[in-house]
Image 1 (cartoon, one colour):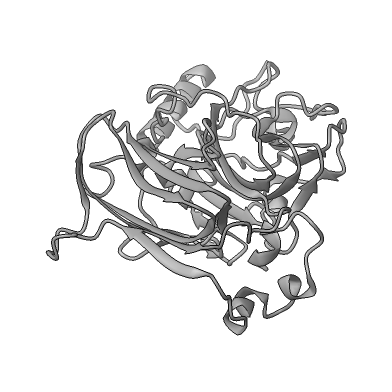
Image 2: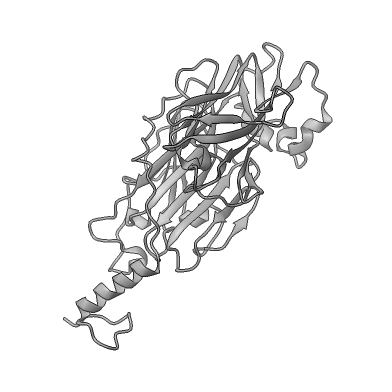
Length: 395
């Protein structure tokens, strides 16, 4: 299945067959050599890490010359969250001497770890393993023709004491990579969305629902120029309200087509292969809820993911992926996504990466804040001694 993601032409039968994930085990690969770059202690000791990465410093993890394909990445960092913010360590990848990155995202969000938190995640291309999600893993195939360079930037505001990693890759003979092999890309986008002027009218709580007939104001997941295929996203939503956050439709506009697009969805949880406003943990290789806040409705932080190993969204000229933040974009949400895709180079340069202040996480809302909301409501109602909470003020 994964094999089909790195071919722009029609996939072979093997790449879509039931056994395709392990099909490579059954084929000898003359001229292919398996190699690794890691943080091992070259003195033979046990100090197997990069050390003392200063605030603002960039460190190169791998700089590979020649043709090949990265097959596996593993990373763990000390001290763990929240002491060192994985939200503020920036991961970048460059292919074939390009000057703008093809991958640019906080290292936590790239691997499926939101909000500088640590929790387990298990999907086909990405995982966060024991202990407590601190081992971050990628199995995305990342081919290159002449060079691959991976770096991290420390923007945490403090020193990173220790950074451990593997980058496993296959070295190919010159010219062995097929001409129609695309390159791996990933882009992070974060936005504190703005509610509509008529209010946060989800589920018609405040009156009749309005309609969205343009897609204007949708949260942008990816805006791609070129030829390739989209293969999934990590979606991190922080809701300041117990109201359901996910009535927003997903929208894929292929090759410049107008709204409603040729792939228009029916709701956020529907795109993520779930239903009926879930708030329970569930992890499948292709989709899941890796982190939920189920104590007070949908208040708080939820991490959802979906990958497309058998159903990538293919495009010939461009692709714009967006999703409403609530029906008709009527909710204020702290939203972030990392989109993943493959495309032929060159790619359109990403917008300037947001600085630490722009990436700043919104604080959690808890019982004390909700109680203050209730107190303000009671005062508005006249502070009656037996006010319960669902009374309506008389005109």
